[in-house]
Image (cartoon, rainbow, N blue to C red):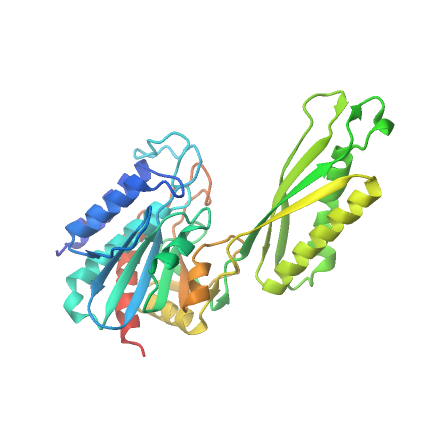
Length: 378
């Protein structure tokens, strides 16, 4: 299958727009999976028979050495306001993170690699991963066997803050770990005019929010990255009653495992201390998300050199406080995750997010070249 440049680019854009119009949430990507399977099979790609509820794994090439490329395929529960002609047709669901772009990029790389399959020094495995947004997809693919015999893996995220034609990555820690916490404050309800007869959980919750902010500013070395954010407070249902309970929810982001554990310990200590001081109770529920994404130094440098060779303007990325399920792969095998500029006026997870489709063809050619050259390395 051979494409003229314009035809090839338009095909990838058309696929991206079809995915964009038909977004599906994490773990529900049934139609998305069917589309990608069809496109891959039509191009002559081998589909691997892994047991997956959603998601696709394909392969191109022959030989013992295997390099993997990964795209994520799920969308977010966001109502789209971008105004593009190919806006989401599924109310309340949108590709607001650009996974439709990532999928079209790796589909393009698959087509290019298929064209030169006989010249490849091994096999390229293509992972179209579900459920990145809820951090379960990478584990599912690993459990199914998608990393068997793979020596290195590469993936991307579009970066709306970078111009099209710009590439960034870094060796070592890159994206943050993502932990979620829920704090349930149990006080004693009372009439709002007689607060002394109760144990006001709203006052306690307010003190708790302020106290949690001292972790980053007073407990952790100022040179270490850490974010503690309370993102939801829920309690009470009328104006003249002190409620019995208040619930807080939030997230912790760091780039080091020891800091991650220290922050959790301090949150539990602060909750216990304030509960005792107020004569109330605070239950702490902790949810561990993906770990810190740590790029292999060698492969990160290699990916940047290939990007420079194919014409990208390259730079060393700043640390990201966002999380990325790709981190789970890098716990198992080496590889590199990279950023490619998408120049959207609105950021990731915004209802008007609109990446520049001009990035797609060049990124597809980049990943095909990256995989081809990675197979040649010892």
